[in-house]
Image 1 (cartoon, rainbow, N blue to C red):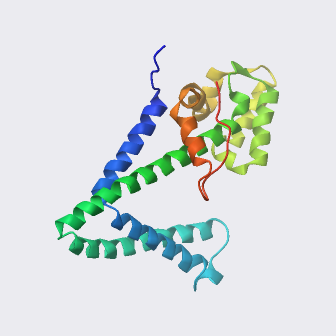
Image 2 (image 1 turned 180 degrees about the vertical axis):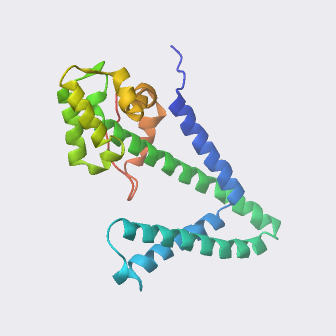
Amino acid sequence: MAYSPDVLDIAIVLAVLAGIVAGWRRGFLVPVVAQIGVLLGLTFVYAGPLSANVPSGPLGLGAGAVAATAGGYILGSVGAFGIGLMYRFAPLRRMDHVLGVPLGAVAASATVYLSLLGAVTVDGWLGPLHDKGTLTQPDIAQLQAVIAANPAAGAVMDPYALAALAKAAATAPITMEQLAKVNAALSFYETNVRPALVQSRIGPLVLSLGADLPIIGRHVEYPTP
């Protein structure tokens, strides 16, 4: 039977193509200079004069985000002015655009990889939901245990909603229709997102190729139907 690409595969291809087009339009030097500004901003906050005064927790992360944004914007603006002068020479302009193509493709591919990595992580958290017509108390208890072990999972699964489901499941198993009324996001993931994830042929390839990347690379098991 001929392979028919699913929605996720199409989205991955379109994302990389969009990155290539963006790379051509922006060129090579402007994004690189902007990224240098981001690194300088982070260094200024976390390893520079302000490092002793950076608060802990979310406020510290927020300060780093502000510094990274400001550094990228300032240095990117300065770099854009200088590069604009360089662009008066047509050969240099064309070369910069050509070099921007692989940079855009790499940036888009990295974004796709991180997005898939996040999706696979969430899929692992939601394991007790997979391929279930109904949910019982033990299933919901497993979801609650996931949140206890991984607080970040609370952003996907509302602990209060799970508590309500556990109380209802004490009387009778929870159907997927009832789950949709209590937590539409979980129901949408199971009925729409997960089928596209497990049927993808490009997704496993992207995760396999990205597993050995420095810093962001992770070895994970791709979900199966």
